[in-house]
Image (cartoon, chains in turn cyan, purple):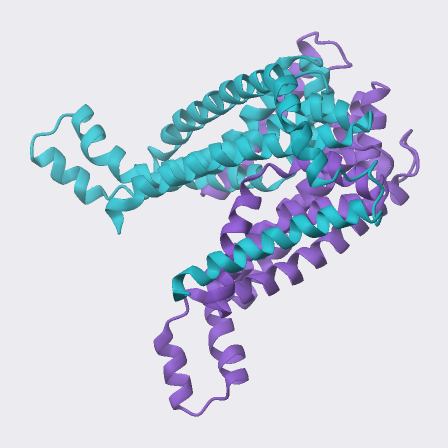
Length: 249
Length: 252
């Protein structure tokens, strides 16, 4: 076997092993099938569950898109405005870093109080989750812009708009795109938290209902479906972030 | 141009301004008292909660539940995370084989797995600890691996040529060089572990600060709700502050 295939072989063997242990622990009754569905049952239910899940998936993805886009745009505008002056950068940066690290999920009962058990709560909380990682990255991105280059662009006769599109924005792009990656991850997490807590809309509600009614095989199928879709979204953004950082290498 | 006030002072000014605006809004705008509580009343509630003279039942037992879950979860997050990260950095084969799996797991919003954890592990402290670890561990793994990998091979070569043993090289050269990145990972991991624990407590309510927050919101005890939320947020702020002190002391 050529040496560079060895990691792939180990990985595949490991995944097969996990699926086998999963299967055996149900087959031989180590874990009650009420709590753990076997991979075979999960696979059998997969197509049917996907059909049930489609409207929920649509609700989740629209809520996520609105939350993600509004959180990111708000963060971009606010972050850019704050970064225009080095002084306001120093004033606000520590507060915003705090916004990332504190457990914002405790605010959820307040949001329910203010916005009700409606879709608004999902979108507001998802947008808030996306806002903080994004604004930190927008502000960090502003440090990537070298004042010399801006002066040079001006000296070469670029207008304000041209300086922005040709010099400032390209310099910020790598950090901005990795900010989008983190914001996307946070927004997905935020949307699912509220959906699970309210259990009225989206995949979170479906997963919650399947869990409390012990429809275990469908539950595993729904979770795997959700995980696959979110991984695809995250990976797409991850590759985009890498793509836009390439010129730096 | 030199600024008139230091950024720190201006920052405090911003915070005070927000508090004043919040107080004024809560008292003068005529909003329903169930929706918003003025900060002065919230502060008073915080004092009463700590003095156990408020309506909040069994504050200290519930807080210990949360802190205990957090400590156990973080001990696992930190030790297991550093161990896995070191394995990834130490052996190229292990790294190449398992890192893609960890990356994919990282990309899953963990909260969607929480119903499964509850189904298998019940509703006690264990599922909350497990969920805290699941949310917190990834950043520790990635930062440890990245920190150990970015150590200049030249330093290791130099230490070897000076006759250092393998153990000495690891503890005196590699670890100090990787420490800033690893510590940053441990700090972020702590923040994520708290988020995991509180999320878990709020989604399956039976004990801890999450229980109290749910109790206050269910009964529309708004000032108490605000007070409990701020106490919970402060756990994160205090933990983060501790790490900043540690980082300043160790990373030189």
